[in-house]
Image (cartoon, rainbow, N blue to C red; front, top):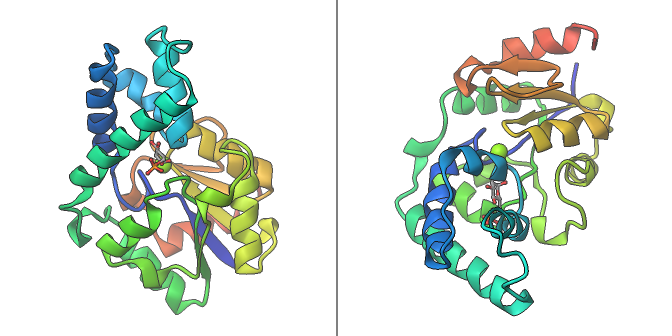
Length: 220
Ligand code: G6P
Ligand code: MG
């Protein structure tokens, strides 16, 4: 049986994508760039500064802002995101997650978090879930972003398991690619993900039983 499950945060444990979108939309509007939900989908799982770079390119303004100005824009977005996060509590935990975390604890399976969000510790605290995670990757120490496997390999090392003994759960394409590149087995949440070992429509379909069944099915 698998020894660890490593979760992405945004879109798997809780859904903050609409709050990121709101904060980026306002920040982009202030510099004359319009973003829509279709464009926003491309920011899933992408770090703060990389998201800003994509937005500037989208608006044809990648040359208009130097590093200091980019840092200021990112700080502005994050301040707004922080305001929007203020009302977050355990009601924002996605369906299926509490029961799955209970079952993993019961069966002695290690639980890790692999989020590129620098707000991840704060969000886990707000959701009341921090104690349920045996190891959380510190995103500020990463050198490569998803789809590079670094974040998942770091989580496996932190939990003391080999990637071949672990399952990763992700809602973003870059995340599924990162899991697959790490040698772990991937579970995707959503409907437009390529290459997930198991694809589920939403977190409500996640369970101890379905992870066990998935693990006992040989990889394709
Ligand atoms: C997650 C989200 C991204 C976000 C990133 C960084 O991966 O899916 O949309 O840009 O975290 O979040 P942060 O809280 O550090 O700005
Ligand atoms: Mg995500």
